[in-house]
Image (cartoon, rainbow, N blue to C red):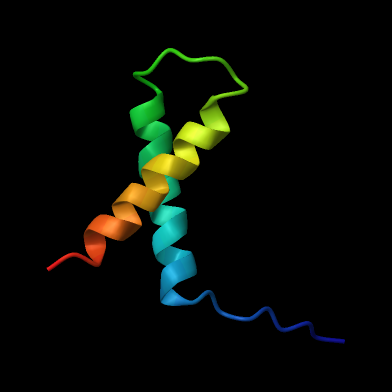
Length: 54
């Protein structure tokens, strides 16, 4: 049986790439492990927002 995995949408692909970039940014920031996921998400959201600006 073959299982087909749906292709990621452009937004999902972009979000994954931005998350990788956010991880690189977070490598230079000292913060607690509880704050890190929220900060990563905020960075990704800021990058997505900036892409939509004229």
